[in-house]
Length: 380
Ligand SMILES: Nc1nc2c(ncn2[C@@H]2O[C@H](COP(=O)(O)OP(=O)(O)OP(=O)(O)O)[C@@H](O)[C@H]2O)c(=O)[nH]1
Image 1 (tube, protein in one colour):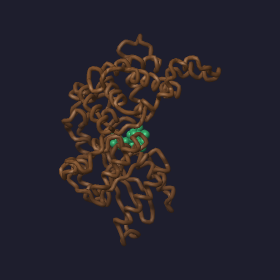
Image 2 (image 1 turned 60 degrees about the horizontal axis):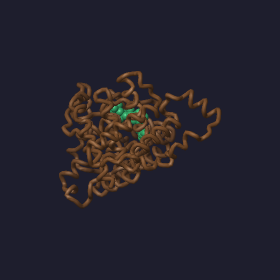
Image 3 (image 1 turned 90 degrees about the horizontal axis):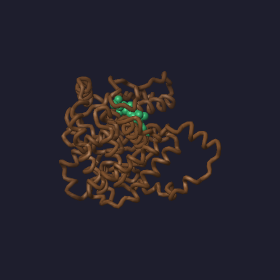
Image 4 (image 1 turned 90 degrees about the vertical axis):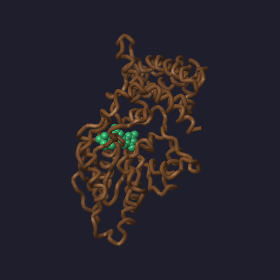
């Protein structure tokens, strides 16, 4: 079911995003990215361990192309970051899939201290295994690599913060640049995450291939924030997200918010009413998020079109976007801008995990043709 859903949403997404992606093709590949790509490639054979950071929502699409030439080994760990935003059961399936194919893989939420603590322990254990007898006498260098915006800098900051605190020798806290915009990391920088023996982690700039031929791949990268919004049409991106939402089970969880108009008559305290008036246009407020969910649920559950028909699906998406003007309290007198405002708010809620948890890459079938060697190599 999850696989069919992802395939259907993918097809619709590809249809919706075609024009936008043609416009964006290759624009992300700056001279700066080319230089970073060369610098990373030179260092890969020199470091002890490579952590390939991928986005847990797109474990396949976010693979780091330059590592394709290296077979799975104990010198490489795939880190599925932003685990808090992915579908939990599909994340588990992805990790099992990688492990089944001898690729060490770990899911992490870099914003969560407990998750980082566990990951740090796991990393130390891997380093001990790698270095064996030499462990206590040698310094280990770990390099984080990945496409833009997968959370490499947040991960290195968190490892540095926790590792530094637990290390016997405490250094000054440093910070790698973090941003919701892709390509903010410009240089390779080193951070100490353990002492006696020393472990250093190199944060590197995000790198994408110069050209990506598949529209579906580009659409997923844009939706998850790897390709900057200014390179794509945000309305198309919002439509793509809605196609994913409508073909998933996530919106059905919001049924309890839709009480056939009863919500209108529920009595609210003065304080609640005041707060609602004061923050009416702040889409991050819980009452606005609930309104958004309620409207999306109402439109999707009362729609009678065929989900396999692109035209029907697009009609539903248009109805949902219409309904969101009210939910987000966006006045319609702003012309073109008001639609853009609605789409931006919707994308922001999706990207912060407030509209459900989605894994956009289906887990390949272990036993089918997908397990043929060349395809496995493409994935891991
Ligand atoms: N929800 C969630 N957000 C995360 C996580 N890790 C990173 N982020 C967010 O993802 C965005 C990108 O994080 P960065 O650490 O700047 O990503 P990067 O890979 O270093 O980006 P580049 O500079 O493009 O290479 C920021 O808005 C982070 O707050 C995570 O585990 N969970």
